[in-house]
Amino acid sequence: MRNLLQDADRDRLLAPLAGALVGEVLLAGRPHRAVAETLGSSLYPAQANAAAVELLFQPGIRPAHAALGDALLDFVMAMADAPVPSRRAAAGGLALQRDDPGAVEAETPFSRFSGDLMRGEVRQALRGGAAIRHTGNLVEFRIGHRRFCVDAEETIVSAGAVQEVDRIVLHHVSTIRGEAGLLRPRPVEAGTLEMRYELRGDSPVVRVKARFTAARRLGRVRITTAVDGLDDSGLEIGAARLLEGGAWREATPPAAPGATKWTQATPVAHLALGRPGFPEAAPVLHLRPRDPAKVMSVTAQAQRGGVLHWLLLRHGPVSLAAGETLAVEEERFLGAGAVATIAAAMERGGTGFDLDAAPPSGAAMQAAAAALLLDDRATPARREALRGFLGRQAERIEAAEPVPGDLAGAAIAADMLRRAGEAEAAALQARLLARLATLCDAETGVVRPASLGGQALAILAFARAAVRPDAPDEARLVARLLGAVAAEPGSGLLLAGAPVDAAADPEGVALLARAAGCAALAAEAGGSLPEEVANRARDLHRAAVALLRPLVRPRLGILEVVGPAGVTASLQTLATLALLAPDRLMLDSRPADAAPA
Image (cartoon, rainbow, N blue to C red; front, side, top):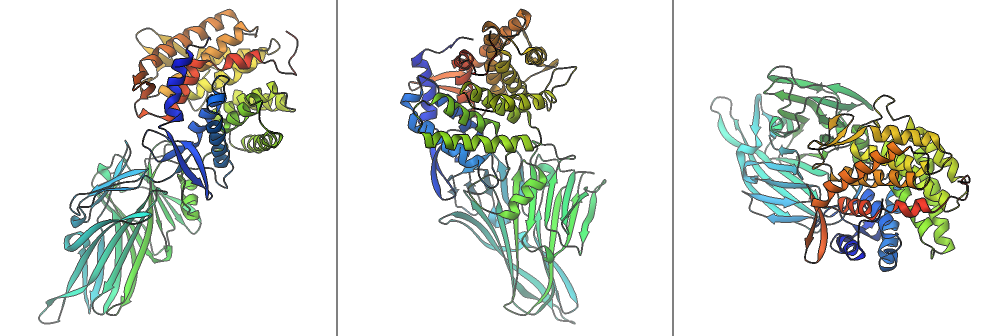
């Protein structure tokens, strides 16, 4: 469809992307400019930056933002070319907002922390998501023949919160007591336990350190590190995976209220706790003992059948003389991502990235292809670097498990490369579209796994190819994909007959607006699309734009696109692209290998 933006409004929409959202992040020791996830965030998402690159390279925009566009493209390529590509980079964003031990508050780019350290409680909450409590620690020991088990939280004598150069340390110290004497037992000090929780701005991992120092000779000393109150966390943990001897094993909480040992006298290298089946987008709690051999047992306790309440890792046992110590370290991560992928990332360590590894990026290919096609001032060296990057990414995408959005993005990139006259681009586009077609349900026309954004990207990829009069297969796919989406007055958008929560997924709405507009443009440009398909595309385009318009709000001379998470780089970029209709320019640029019209 036509460009819906006047130049002045376009520039007002660009203002947040070129101003308040821009920050600096280090990758492999090198500084990069990038756009942040949201206003004030210290997280820099690779995919949103890739979309911003495509926008900033558009004619009419490029001259005023050439330096920023080049910088963001460098960031996108560095993220995609990392040894283990990540979805987001992190920089700074570490703040101790309140250091009162009784009501501490701290923040990292990934989580918010609060709690009463004098009661031994640290609460960690994902932004807008689940929360857990780091608490419930125990110390067990023997004095002579007598056994003791002491709740560390009930004997705290001091606590504090300190911001250091690169971390925040939350800590509390407990005096652990027992009894000595055979005939007349008397209270005695057994030792001290210090619990430390280290938070960093460049890593989502919380490092838990427990150190018990004996005040007298003790036998069979054990430290139990724990996470408590998990049934109130919003996680609904009903499943676990334990890494033992290099192999994963499944476990579940007790089916009735009570406790069960998940492992006994077996070294545990990693635990992952989540909902049954570990849904892809659901948060998972990971625990990684730094010394698996010290783990004596793992116990799961439930207050409601089938839902984890209290998890205990018992470390030891050792005998200690006065002044000797037992130290335990553990790494914890709360967030989404494939269990094995997160576990491998925690084992590797490192800082500056989120732990959720990214698949080969079609969006990154789109960004680089847009630069190769649209930047007529690029040096030969720059163009060769872009070709090399695109070749590497294409190989990775073709070798990886098919992901609809990335296959579609790569196919769109291949379409741009065709229009730039790049050799082998047509064959690459054909292979990618063929793989993408296998993910489209033959009956419903829905791309699996189903999402409005994934459906829209598939429509866009096939519509870009369907502009050719010799592309009946692509045209049929566009018709099938568009047929799975409907705009019903009073009901909003439907995907395969099911309502779409457009308010919760404005990025998907923006992608649909662009994709439906591109399909309509392809029909107008002489493609193989029947008129009824073109009319459906126009209807969907109008409906999606109508849903986007109320999100565009003026503020202090600029225009912000405000979704559920406020102003985000992703929504600001995708909405601007949808209203700008960049695909008209692409469809007007005829591939050198195209058949005559």
